[in-house]
Image (cartoon, rainbow, N blue to C red; front, side, top):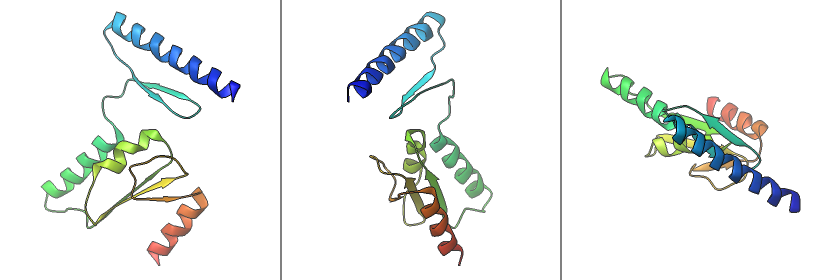
Length: 120
């Protein structure tokens, strides 16, 4: 527990340093806190933006997807889970944690088994 608390403190300090660096250089990175890592990127698009864009592109040429399924295992996938709605948008989180996905499985092997069931 002490190690985890110390790691969280270091991660917060790192985030503050990165935000100051970004402010000083006028280029803000995206800083995402994961359970045991800190992800730093200069992405301007989220995975959700990409999913929405691809779906919109298909619909704009009169070839909308009949259904969409997205799956992911970390916080960077949450925007993907939020991207769609309705009955024909299936979102699956791999692992247990707070999520906006409609469903979850415990392991990648369970996701694979689920995909095989869908394909059958």
